[in-house]
Image 1 (cartoon, rainbow, N blue to C red):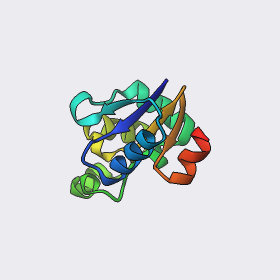
Image 2 (cartoon, rainbow, N blue to C red):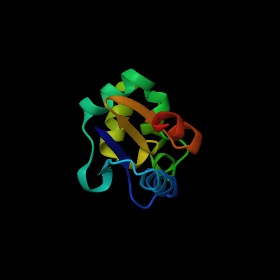
Image 3 (cartoon, one colour):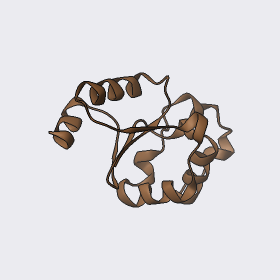
Image 4 (spheres, rainbow, N blue to C red):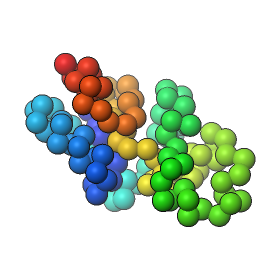
Length: 114
């Protein structure tokens, strides 16, 4: 099973979805804005790629946090923030039969689906 996680208005998400559609890859899209994301799923992703990879500290959502919310972030705190603010998760997250890839590049996707 292939599932793509993200938000529909993100430019990187649009590129990833276009690539998958052009390559005729059948996938399910999970919209964080509508469906949210749960802590156990994020915990599993963190075990594979690390919370530092998943947490988007460059985005507007992170920058809008109070300074106290940004301090002393560890895995548990990062997961709590990403559950509360799914826009804070780097995009896209691609789940291919339980294997997680974060971010999009044509080279990476070509290698996965080559």
